Length: 171
Image 1 (spheres, rainbow, N blue to C red):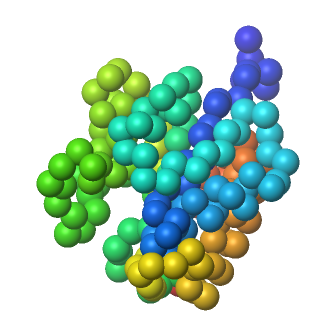
Image 2: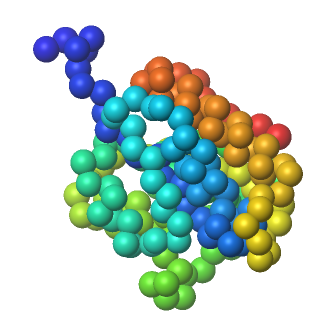
Image 3: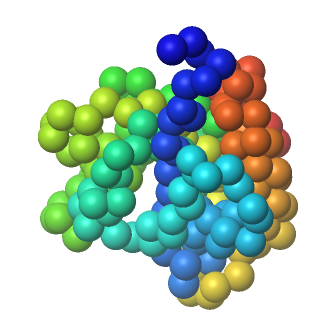
């Protein structure tokens, strides 16, 4: 079988975050917006919320995972960065004290311990506001629109332009 007729990989776009904590809900807002768009059949979009290890079942038969989340980074609020996590990838300043605080990084690590080795890509923004509320701040809302546009483009070109997009951080 040649590469032209190969079945596209199953990709899961997983929007994570706490929807009632303002900008923390960025990933879920992006997932909700993507669900309103017709995407190729090999793309699944899920709202992961703050599911932690409960999300392991969602990862079955996935060969590419795109995680959409907020992260405290060097970016300005609403700035975006798309990258692959390296072996030392960690969220700055985060200390896990219980299983209730398990985040997506720990989920991916557990998935790998269970024998899965998918391609993992993070699309993150820096939050401006982490406080009670369901609305995104203006810069993070704009970042959500741009994230949806980028993900739609990547999905429709079967991630051919992913390599050019990686490690691109914008303000």
